[in-house]
Length: 352
Ligand code: 0PR
Image 1 (cartoon, helix red, strand yellow):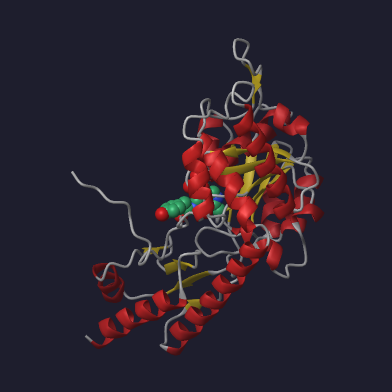
Image 2 (cartoon, protein in one colour):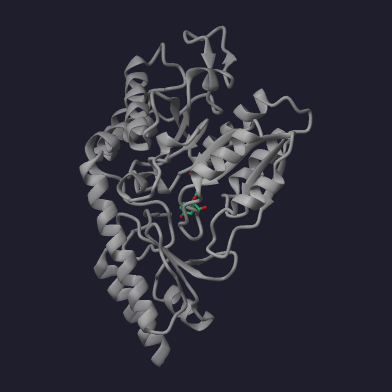
């Protein structure tokens, strides 16, 4: 069979995108290097340190420890694991808004912790009072999302951090998707100003690194060390990552993507994507669709089934939220021209 990779010119709902050309080239050079064994593969280990340093700058965390994970799922699992390690409870729980990514369900299942999902407010953000009411002495971790998967919402991070602090629980921020937008927004907080224990920020989403490249950051080396197991027969004698052999391509790609784009290109992407999201939201509103006002560049809107199907038939890759809205993620490959053509598809479907 002659298979070809997916073209991106009609992909609207995915959080993946075309990798940056320099990241693609770097990935290819390190296909056989294993960052899981840094003593044997020191060059890729250096690139990983460099990637973590840049992710620290992006997130404003002061000298965190971390690594390039396989993706946001692994990073979120590791956050739950790190919190469970220090929890005093035999029956620990994790409190998260119901907007949290489904990777937390996997984490809870794997690690035997209870996941308490708390309803969000009317604007799809974590409800701080409801989170406060759900925590108790057994709470190991409170989760805030900075850029939700379905609506692109940013939770009230400092307030959630306080709830975690008062409950003596760890605090995790999932910025897997939103992390490369937040530094350029005027949110009244920056990651570094909240008491964050662990954080997810994925280079293989808005960072334009080739897959696989997630980002897991921990406040300090001790937090990361809690995850380490001994690896006595390797040249490197401990390993904190979830997977063993890891992708040198993913790590080298992430390091190169960050080098090439932080910060000017990421800022330009943020401006372009936000402009496109605002344009799309306006155009859809003018046409009478119900639009969820975008916070970060992700537009969710009500779309009748016939038009949804017509768009899919025209080759647009489009998905719906759990509550039925169509959602368009303004990723780096999504241009104004693409959105204009998409609107033409909808216009034709409404007339037809
Ligand atoms: N945290 C958040 C906020 C996410 O949005 C995602 C993935 C994750 C964690 C997990 O990341 P990994 O998938 O890297 O483990 N969000 C996307 C989603 O569920 C993942 C995705 C990407 C799905 C591209 C489809 C697709 O085409 O929609």
